[in-house]
Image: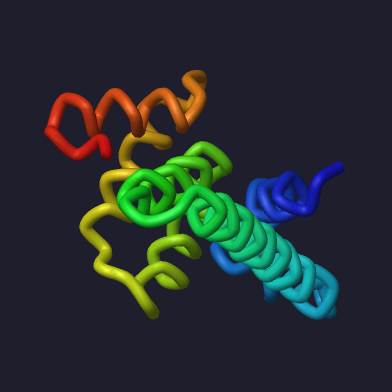
Length: 129
């Protein structure tokens, strides 16, 4: 049973809205796993952003918008934790406009490869270099 299922089961069985109090000591077991999951998924997002940055640098100038949007799109397709992480991590250094567009593309179209989504978007908006 996944820890999310365990939390839901405790809420249903105990009727308590806070899983930390549904079973003595349970918060000690569950909440670190939740934090570890978020940290791991955020780290994976950072690694994906680094891969995209390397590809951008290998390709040369003029592809910034594409790779920023592509990395954010891939984060959006991976899940909400990754989408939020990409906005936070991307916002540290970059303008969030392209990052947000990329996340939106990924969340709306999880079945389409991000390189296609981003290319089509940029072509439609005059941004392909």
